[in-house]
Image (cartoon, rainbow, N blue to C red):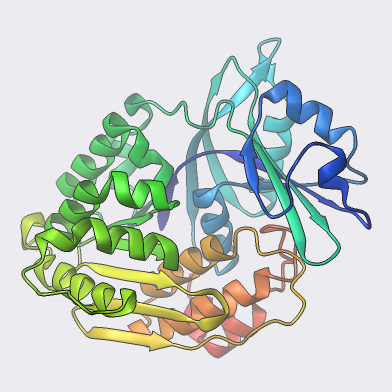
Length: 358
């Protein structure tokens, strides 16, 4: 197995409306909210021609890696109804299977997690999420045998909210010498779990993905751990000093010389402005090509992470990994979520022949 992903199993549901549908449903444009499974059922009745796509950070990333030729498996939880997989679990599993991602799932007696994304005129969208069974992963699902089969482990940052599960993943990756990557997933997690993320960078040489808001939240939380004067500096300048310190301190030494764990890498996704990356090679910035009228940006950052890790495992250099990830994320903007056509990454495979390697 190339990549083992661990995270929230969410069925993404997309609706496209010519009207301001959100307000009529009691939702707010350009905002997200958590709702009960029953409320989500009600909302779905008003959505014309919904499109169902397996989602959640880890599943999205793995589908991208698999599309680039890697062998991937996903660990998560889905829901049941009358002791069988519920409708949403069946849709989630079928979509993962179509993407050639193995699903290693446990069942819970609550509905499968769902996330409804309603697109409306004026580039507005509203999101209603019902996590359901998704966050119910337990440590027993993560075994030493499973971890040892992987060349890379990728974790949805939501797992940081479950210290028992995340601690198990970190310990087993360290014991097996398998490199770990984490997408931080939210500004709240960046702030609240900054000590855990800082320790991860220092001790395991992990790869950490963030968006710009998450990066600033993490840097602010880690500021007191870095011996420097930050007065008068801009947020970007603070991030540069703090993240440069983190990746130099996170040399992977704690993982042991005979492991596969590499040096720490911090990747900050900036959307149409590209990406900034801090690693042992220093700071790298790569531009991205803007898209004037994207269909949907859900999962674009996850697609970026999946492509970056695929490129890294195929042996591409850092600059090529970032270029690959930017191009893959751009391709995802033309599809609902990560419902990508089979030939979406053909140009990438031709550009980087290493992806053709089995």
